[in-house]
Image (cartoon, rainbow, N blue to C red; front, top):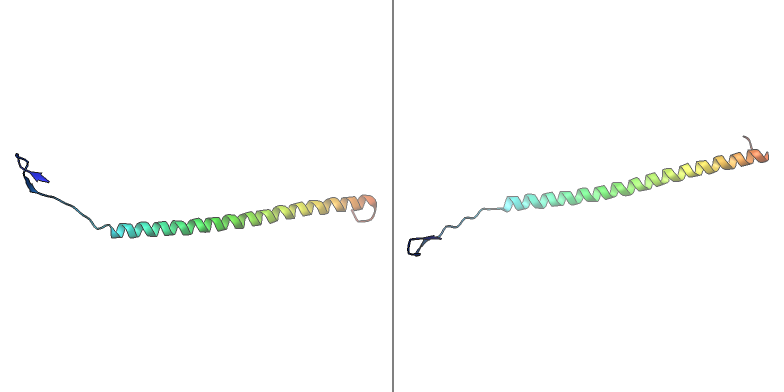
Length: 79
């Protein structure tokens, strides 16, 4: 508000701006972030599955090697 020396209102100033584009951009960024987080979670699940399977295969190979060694000691298998 603009006032004179006696305090009488002489005028009012108001400002506004259109934030539609900014809000749209913020919504797009939030949506993209959400998609990226979902994809990251999917990749993490896939990584856990593949690493888990690899570890299981390593364990099974060790068991097979131990059993082969035991059979060879018993004379029932080849060394």
